Image (cartoon, rainbow over all chains, first blue to last red; front, side):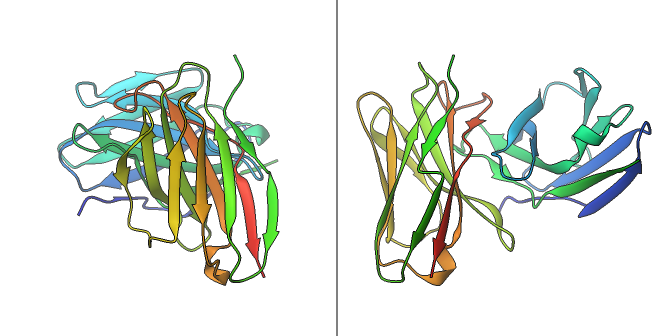
Length: 112
Length: 113
């Protein structure tokens, strides 16, 4: 079945450095991907999305890269700040699915 | 525009009881999905409702059920609660459910004792 996973369960970065969070997916039919950020005690918050007809999409301090050849998704956060500390989830959906499939999440810790 | 509202925020129930959780989606959104989040299993899809019809269902036992009302508000019910049902239950709403971002509520933290 389809599945989404993350290479690293935890990531610690120095404040001001760039962060890269990775995600692997197995469903080649997936055509829509989202990155969510979840802070303690809160629900997941949308960060950025990308469709399969794109390789890269940029937002404010965040960039999502999609490599369909190896079924890999990454989230880059520029100049990481303490407020970026959270758990980050990737989620994917295909045209046939009515729900998102979430990865297990990566905890990002920003060190002062 | 108000976000997704889930009530209550916290619940404590005993084994064998049943519980009903409520979700009010963003105004204009017709699709509501429910997820269970636990430390061990992560975010797992429960079911999705669109225009009062269950459109998709995850791999959960029949003790988990839901419904959607004509105003798009949704409820989920868990009967005969088990300790393992302790989790954060999240509701997400989307405009039409496909190919669009899902907006999550704060969740309901259910503790079964």
